[in-house]
Image 1: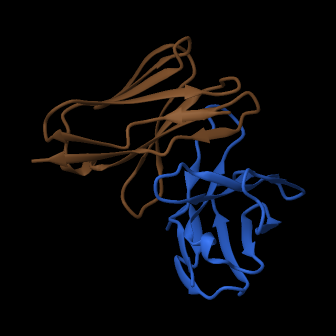
Image 2: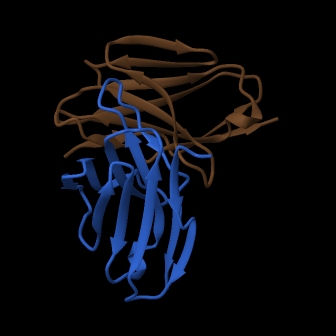
Length: 113
Length: 109
């Protein structure tokens, strides 16, 4: 089983719908992240959380919200999906010591029509 | 602004050596990562450099020059399974990761 699990892996939805992407991890890491990846662009940070009570906006948080339900769970929501939110979304975790490499989930491919 | 530059695509031959360059301009520097990402899959960690010099890990090596804002990933004895995108990422002064767009490496027999 994967250490960082994302659901759903693929989702097609319509403009205006609410979508939730879920992430759970068994690595015991406190730090969790949501990124989106678009062709030709680097990974862009949406939100990150250092623990259950600490949630921070990334560079592209507009149109997204998150919830850290437990140390192991971090969900990303699109309240009203729009077509330019079509992307590959990754959840990642890291431990709080050097080098602090990221461990990524398998990704959730979202298409907004 | 902050910027990471990598070539978009490179082609190499099985069994050969390839060097993927990464140049960066960031507000501060606290380390540089290389990740490998096969098509449709998650990135996986390859290497980390925080001091100048070469870090070797099997067939893969990574070099850093902080004064030049430059790193490279060297892949030796290329195998078909090395066909992937290679992502360079720099940790800035706020310990945030700045990502390059990635280099797609195509290996030909």
